[in-house]
Image 1 (cartoon, one colour):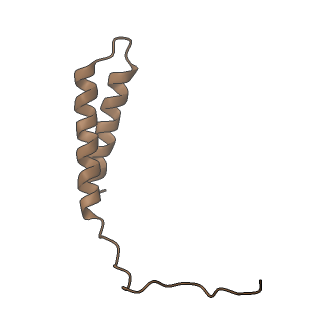
Image 2 (cartoon, rainbow, N blue to C red):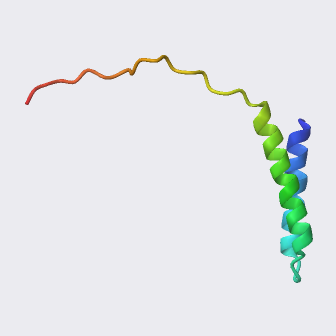
Image 3 (cartoon, rainbow, N blue to C red):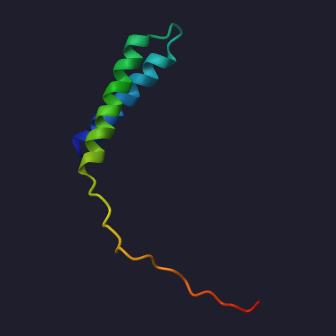
Length: 66
């Protein structure tokens, strides 16, 4: 398992725990969200970008039956 997924899971778990208690712990919630976003950012960096389309615009044939 990629360590980026581990950051996402741990950050989400901390955020849920901080939100689930009767007295909401804002500090834990912020830390959990920061870890979650760090994991998502690192995971996004490993995904390759899309290939560029060719420069011309592809269009469909238009039937002129009016």
